Length: 177
Image (tube, rainbow, N blue to C red):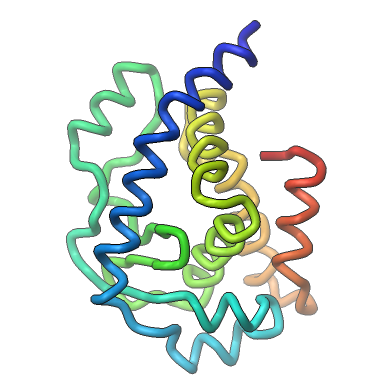
């Protein structure tokens, strides 16, 4: 019963989330730039070249994310939503916004979300993200975030290159999101 309720709530709430993602992506696109070649050289062993070609980066402070009222609403619902001022970067489909130039590991993490968006689509991504937050109650425990953190950790450990697309596809097939 709880799962049905969570899925229903996520479906209802995901529409405005998906709309927000599209609006921010479209608004930031003209301000964005391609992935810097220094990061591209480091990341091309992990990501499909089409993802590296289409990703766009915007450095902007403050980040274009919901204000404190959103966080307060989340807290009223018992959710652990991070303070917007502590968020270093956010991905809107294929546009990554960051407060300052990003180190390679942060770009890697955000690029995992770019792959998730491409494979899932904006609507399903928004639904799964919303359901993840509602079901776990914590931002860090959202399965889409856990996937990005786990793959980022493997990247930072200096292990041999792997296909992020294959890893995300496995998460999708095993319904880990």
